Image (cartoon, rainbow, N blue to C red; front, side, top):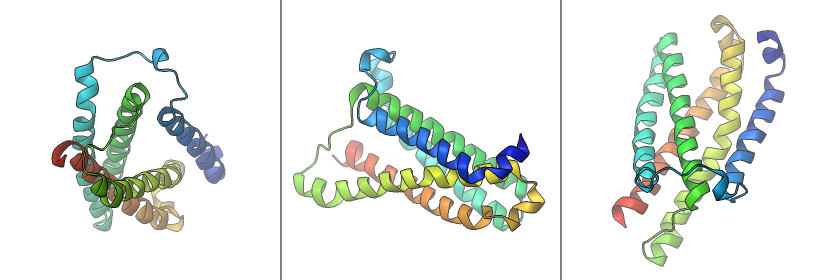
Length: 186
């Protein structure tokens, strides 16, 4: 299995990315009928944005610490932190897609000028970075899982991992800004 993954990292990355992005677009575009999804209580649905903001802040701290850990040569701390960051990302995305599938995207309640010149550009950058991160994260994850730790420095893992982590952190941070604009400022 490990050899199969190792020999097919780009192909598996593409397949997993296509499936993941199809799920995201399917949820956002309302492809799955609302009645096909079990509905949680409204109080839970209302709590999801706040929970996701907390998940985002935790992910920023954990991914940053994991990045620092690898710079200090702490491989186990790095791996644990990045895997935790990935679990947080999956939890965030699952909660977000669940809520959007049932209720659609949240409308911006603030002034039109703020929406047009602040909110929408930040949201667009956040969304593009999140989508770009998906294949990058799969790629570095598959490399990490299919190669011995001693070989990883000789793969694209360190180079692509730095790019993925930078974009991932930026996306999470912009997500917190979006949350603040939607639920705190307005």
